[in-house]
Picture 1 (cartoon, rainbow, N blue to C red):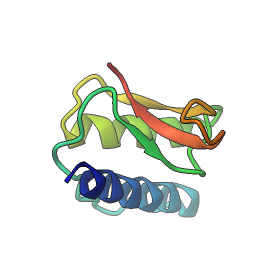
Picture 2: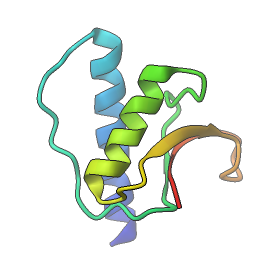
Picture 3: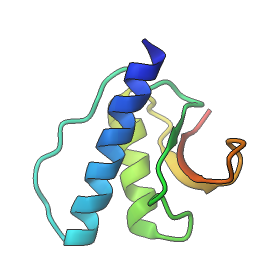
Picture 4: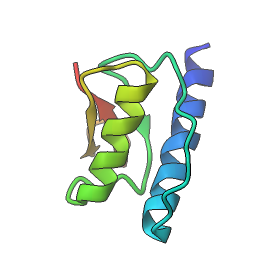
Length: 87
């Protein structure tokens, strides 16, 4: 069940990153049940990009972690980038 939530979160983050890079402002349905302290692997989550961090923050906040989130790199054991919902 946690894997399904992560997959949904990952799909949403990828969608948001695509929309941000395309300059779109369309409505996005956020998944529910994202827990604080969650890490969602997303290669396009650039820690130095304000737009990517805003998308990550929104995914966490509207998914259920009211503390928001930010993009991070390299702490999941595989050296990739991910969206970390704040603890």
